[in-house]
Length: 124
Image (cartoon, rainbow, N blue to C red; front, top):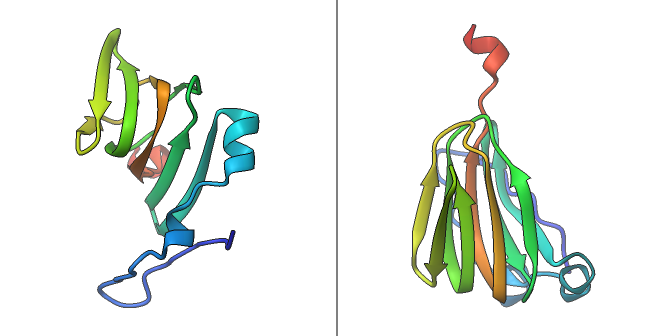
């Protein structure tokens, strides 16, 4: 599987993802219960496709900037601020900066993650 790091080299980036580019490494998925590929990386913006295997878990973590999750296929349940958010294909979830969240999937699924990294030191 090819590596992907797409940076903006103008005002607009359009890239029609091939089937290969949309795939998650099945060996990593089986070994770790999750796998990811960065699709775009520009300054503070990260766009990543993430697969969670059946029975897979994404441990509790947070980001210093806003986060969006758009479920592409399958079923994944996110937990944030003491509440469960079961998502099905097409559903979207948004986390404010600093919100701790985790995910798990009984059946497996794939989602598109968008994160805007904020440098807290430069805000002070």
